Amino acid sequence: MKTYLKWLLPIVLLTILSSCFKDEPKKEMRKAAGSWRVEKVTIHTNDSLGNEISSTEISDVGMLLLTHDDEFLFEGTFSYSLDGTALAGSSMYYLFSQSDVWGIGIDGKTFNIGDNDGSTGYTTHVAGFTVLKLTHKKMEFQYVHVHPVTGNLDYMEEWVLKRGTH
Amino acid sequence: MSTCNKLFVLVALIFSTAAATAQDGIGLYIGASGSRLRFPDFQQFVDNYNDPAYIGTDAEKPLSFQPYGFGYEAGAFFRAAGFTMGVGYSKTKTLPSYARLPEGDRCFQFTNWNYSILMGYHIGKIIMPYATFAFSACHIDAYFDYHGVKSYGSEKLLNGVYASWKGIATIGVRFEKCFGHIGPYVDFNYGLGKKEYLGGSFDLTTNSTQDDFFPTDPNAAGTYNVDGALHESYRNMRLSAGVVFYLFDPLAE
Image (tube, rainbow over all chains, first blue to last red; front, side, top):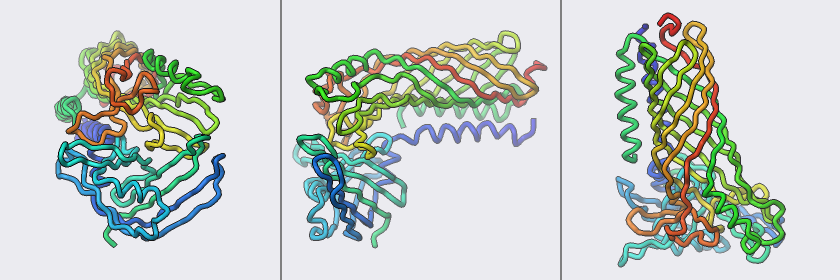
């Protein structure tokens, strides 16, 4: 057997195996950890039937800082420096103001924020957002609110973040 | 990485190192698969969900379990004097199970990943009965589709991704026909696994007792009550077909 063929098998096998574990939450949290520049926030407002009535775009509103311990054993610390005036109509900004920890859910499908009680150590979940995209360079997530009576989608925010401090 | 994953990687590393130094008897396979997942405990959830007291009376389509799924598999093995031992990986995703409501579709989708160690024996040139032991992960994607806007967010208590890990055992038979070093195969197997809870949809921390389990009763969603958690059971029939490639000529064996 040719030498390169003999090594082909382990290479193929290990490539397959390395892809098997991509759904681990720690890997997704490593991608999300660090500082992010909020490039764009889009707010969609619908009527009670779910039809869009307005859409607003806000650009460059500040920074999110998602810090974490090296081992990713616990949820990370969540902090931000955002333009409160520009985001006055944002529900997510309001939810951020109640939160001090963050985490990425299984398979990287949700971005979660919570309020950690330092005296008991327990965390209350504040909100979970849908992750639309998560790479080391770019993150996009979406917040949805439904009409309390009809159950239709009545409000949605999309945040586009890019890695960096400026 | 979980202990199960570490163990599997260790076995795979030993296997691949041995394979790299072996002179013959090595094979690879890759294929596509279709499966039928039996999940009797999820039917309890479906029945509770479809109770008019929960779903209401204006649902256009009640929730129904969609057991059919599709996926792929790949692996590598040694073969010597008819005996075969190998490692494999497979992934299967079911079609979405959904209820159609006026405001959108409530959807559940199941994904299974199996990391298996295979042992078999070739009877003649074509048939190989085998057994596997596998570490299996099952995820339920629970999301709401608001007429095109897909959300895993916390505006709905059931939303999120729930996961379980368990060991499973499989028996199967593979039919292959080689033309020189390469040939097609068809594989049929049936697997059974231990029941496990599905947890973790919005699990923020690993140091608290708070965890969010997939419930048997949708009214109990988000209550963190393990007593009412659904037990995922693995009962899976799988049919797959693909290509097997030997680094030696198996017909000359």
